Image (tube, rainbow, N blue to C red; front, side, top):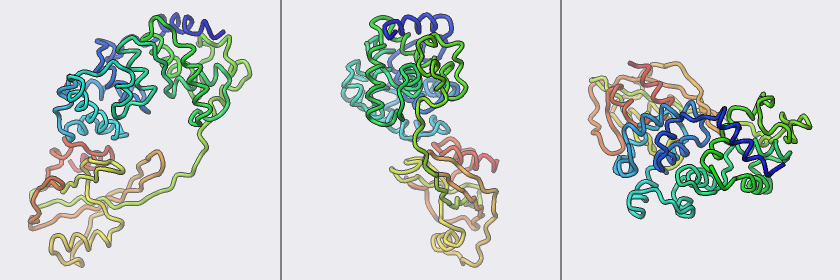
Length: 348
């Protein structure tokens, strides 16, 4: 049963797999690496336009390494999980410093780069360098958990170890890049999380989950936790020239290193902070409330209340490395969190 998984997958891939993804033409190490980082926790359809914009601006590892953090984050804005972009940038500079501006083809050297774990290193090694390395992303975990009838949440170490054993056992010695793409494609398009298309699956005849009617319960889901809601006030402070005040966020934490709007816990606290910073009478400050909105993170929801205020005369605060006064159309060229970009764009 296990021995013919790869041949069946490859025959299916030849007829039904994805052969026209932009990182496949040409399939160069830099493009493969960039696509694998972007595809972490993000679907192919979402990634494609970001990938195309990114490689149009930064065509090589050397150009990526030479870019500023703001340049990289601006290209990434809207794709989420911004630590991926920061790690990508750091890894590019390491490649220039230690690997002559190339992505290393040694597995351990790949694994040592920021943002590259075992599965991502395997995918790069297989697709960029033709090395026999197994992968175990979310799609592959689902395929293997169902095919082998493996109970348990794949995030548990014991379950993950069993899946890695099967992933390695099924990886063939020829057509490594195609097999890697094939099993990812099967998980994405056929062995979907909900409503899998078992009638179209080349592995159906030996799939334990299909045989036992357990496709709805395998793989086990992560134990649910209630997501708390946090609240914040975002301030749209405009000077007499119509420019907005932006601040760079801290280098760690949510939206680390991105530019964003000043925040406060509530309107009263914001009013007193603005009064102190700009030598105003707190009682004279009248905010204009804009529609509030929710933004979902993986572990909590953020309830955002935007408050607008025109500061006249123009404040004396000078631009520096952590604060900038920019017109809305200039601000959106920076690396901004997606909800902040959308909020600023609503002003234009």
